[in-house]
Image (tube, rainbow, N blue to C red):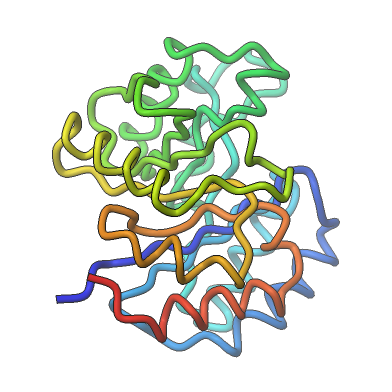
Length: 226
């Protein structure tokens, strides 16, 4: 039986609202429903609502996610986006990305709080880990292994090592799906997905180009991955 595969676009701090909607207009109509592949797009906060509406109007088989949520509930937390306020427009949230850990001092404790907020709002928490020793909070079933050296560098981890890390994480945390992220391209997609313990991809730079992202989806849909 083929494993379920996640293909998740993380746009980071890129694309205006108009550019985001243009991306959806290109990608959405070319998607076909597949029980094997789940597609998620995580735009900037300003574009989330517009992207969600475009996906719903077009009836495209694509989920919408956020790149973060607040560790706090609603209230006097200037600049924060509470999970409770996002739950109507997002299905998933990327938490604990290494860029936030490095640039904003995000800690494992903060990530754990964000996971709690996400689960309370029925948002799927996707927790990023840098290696097999990064702690994963309780209640997390979706993890992205993203080695720091590979993020945006054009120098991905080897599929074999990524698969080994995924296997160790699954051994330690049962019922967990593990994605790989870090310099993913359509050319190396098949090699990563062929690893038996890798359940999908978290894609940064390569997801910004709609045609390139569609190539990645095409590879994911055509392959037979056990």
